[in-house]
Amino acid sequence: MAKTGVLSSHPTAGARAAELKKELQKLVKTIVDDEDYSVHTIDQARAALSALRELKFHKPSTASLRLHEPLSCPEEFICPLSKKLMSDPVILSSGQQTYDRPFIQRWLKAGNRTCPRTQQVLSHTVLTPNHLISEMISQWCESQGIELQIPVRHGVEEAVTEAERHHFFSLLEKLSAAALHQQKEAAKELRLLTKNMPSFRSLFGESVDAIPKLLVPLLGAKSRGDVLHTDLQEDVITTLLNLSIHDGNKKLVAETPMVVPLLMEALRDGSIETRSNAAAAIFTLSALDSNKELIGKSGALKPLIELLEEGHPSAMKDVASAIFSLCIAILYTVCRNDRTKWKAVREEESGHGTISKLARDGTCRAKRKANDILDRLRKGVNITHTA
Image 1 (cartoon, rainbow, N blue to C red):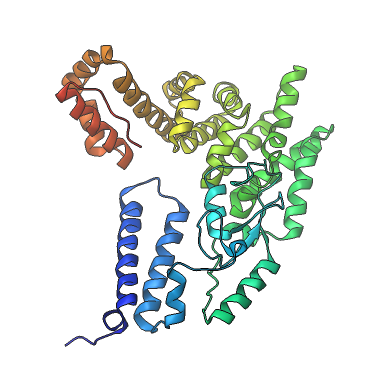
Image 2 (cartoon, one colour; image 1 turned 135 degrees about the vertical axis):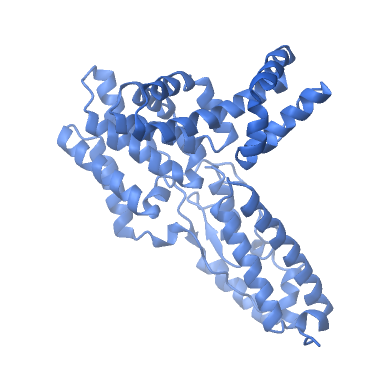
């Protein structure tokens, strides 16, 4: 007979375990089924699994269980986002509001650059521990007999030292220097740093000026009518690609003025490596549906198709991936909004089975949308929006 453990002997722990299992099942399903899952989802799954293990092997005290129950505690100890007692209070750059670290990180990783409560624009996204509030919460929990567990911090921001941050901003300043050799040196180093150190990718999200400063050498040469140095263009475009890999940067990069137009120019005029990396950046950025629309309106398909037709082996995969990602979004939007196009879509499906192939062999998101298109075409009703 199996041992009777904590989970079955303590009703509150059992309920908590059931809740954790349900959450873990949902998170694991997202990771397995959705190719666009984020690092944050993995962290959530890890935290849920850790909490479940704690319940299984360490009998929780009544006091620790009270953390999951409604608390009557000072208002300043409650996170404005989670509405729960903070375990890791931090301050934003505005200095006016304290949040629990994991919840404000989620807000910032979604591409927001304002304080959720005051709507004040943030000068950077560095989170500063609020030691005073943290100490007050610890003292209050001790007086109430509550065990406050500080969560393990995950993420790249903790790996950045002050010396590295200072060096990062000094490189950005060199990009604005008058001397071309300084611009080239800074662009080359930023390319290598963002390739080899994920922490430097996250640094670009800490300042609203970081990405615009990265673009200065290309925009300056364009405004002066100078001949663009191919190696400088290659380094800047490749750095944009490296930044786009970071989930928290995708929205910020795509919505920064002139990023997408410069990617379009690189697709047409750059070296083959630059053109390939520009295509890869477009593919990476198009992981977000909002970015697909923005990139599609910029006219990206034409230079992508032209590059594909040139047949460069080193560029084919990146270009094809970018075209596929944009086309399934465009096809879905056409089918959803313009019923006059349904005849053409039906003829294409009848003759080539393109949508059926997507429904069978595409990414998880492509399969969902392709199946919805097929279903609506069969029923002859309006296409409904799905994420």
